[in-house]
Structure formats: C-alpha cells, structure tokens
Length: 254
Image (tube, rainbow, N blue to C red; front, side, top):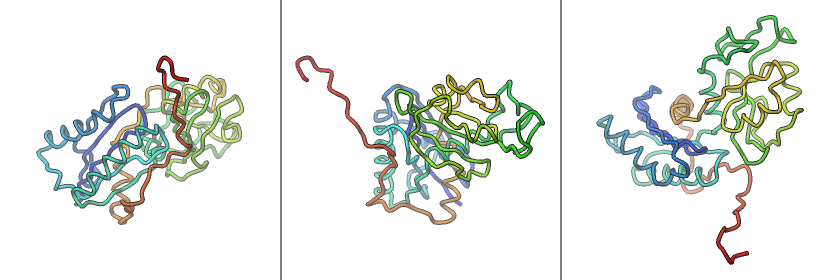
C-alpha cells in the first residue's frame, strides 16, 4: 500500500494530486498567473480536507523535477523537500517531460490526422504514412521564451528517443524524425512548433494539453516500489539552462 502526494509546478499550471497504489484519489489545480507560491499549500490542504486523510498517512512525496519555469521548480521542490523533512518521508523526482508524455498517451487522437483512428498509446500505421514501420512518437514541449522550447522525444513505452534539450524551433526542427514517424507535439511550447511544422502531415498537435500532477502518479508509483528516492540534502531541480534575471523595471534604475 502506498499513499503519494504529487506536485507539479514546472509550468504556469500549479497542480497537486493524492494517489493510493497508483490510483488518483484527489486532484486540485490552479492556473492563476504567477500564483504558485501562494496557491500550492492551499491546494495541498484542500486535497487532505476532501479525502479525510492526514499528512502522516503519506508514504512519499513526488515532485516534477524539470525542466521548466525556474521559479515554479524552486517552489515545487522546496515545498516537497520541506514536507519530506517535516514528515520524515522519501522524495521521488519525476522528469517533467516524461510525466507529460505519460499524460499525452491517454489523450484522444487529434483530428484530422493520419492516425486519427488509433489510440495515442498504440503503435501502428494506417497506410497513409511514408514508411511501413511508423510508430507514433511523443514530443512534450515547455515554453522557454522567444522561439526556444524545452523538449524531448519518447516512444509509447516512455523510452527516450531524443534526449531533453533546449531547441530553437524552425522549419527543419525534428525533420529526421518526421520523415519516418508521426510525432505528437503538446505543451505550452508546441504552439511555436505548430507555426513552423503544421504543413507536415506527420506533425500532430494537442492544442489544449496541460501538465498535471496526476501524470506523475504512474511513474512515482513505479519508483516507490523500486525504492528509487532522492537525497534530500543534495537534490536540486533540473533547470537545463542557467537562470537569467530580467532587468528591474524601476524608474531611474539602469
């Protein structure tokens, strides 16, 4: 038996979930801009009040580890580590893009598309694609400002086909994969890619997909069963890029 609290703060959505043995019991989310710091503890309190459970019932805390928003990741990881220290519970870290892919697999197929009759979790070909071996690939994307995105590419078994990287999107992005496979793009960075790649019949898009704490659960449960926990003293989010502070917009300062 396992009771896991999952926290997702890597993007503009602040999301928390409670799950027992891999099944989501309760979910609470907020999309208030820049509201993670003020909302996350309120959302967690809401989960426990709705479920009649207590913090001491937890077996572990899982957190989305990045890449993503620098501030959002700091808030999520600091909250998760604070709970782990206070409750003496283990910390589970889940790569944000892998968790997004776990969620993308269970969304209905985008339509129209060359694979509209297939479940997104199913590999296969309907005869309209350029190769006979055309398994569907997944490319979660997180906005990294301007034309840059944080992204990776996975297959339906969550095997990493293309490692996590910061990519500047242009007409030739993912060309080698799109020549061989249909690729499903999703996340708040995929709109940039859609502008450049929508003419390719193998480029598919989930326009309204949002990361969620519920997508961490399957991966967190697996790590819990395998005792794959983080060192609380040394664990840090995966930022991918160094934080660059913006110039203060205060009159008289240069």
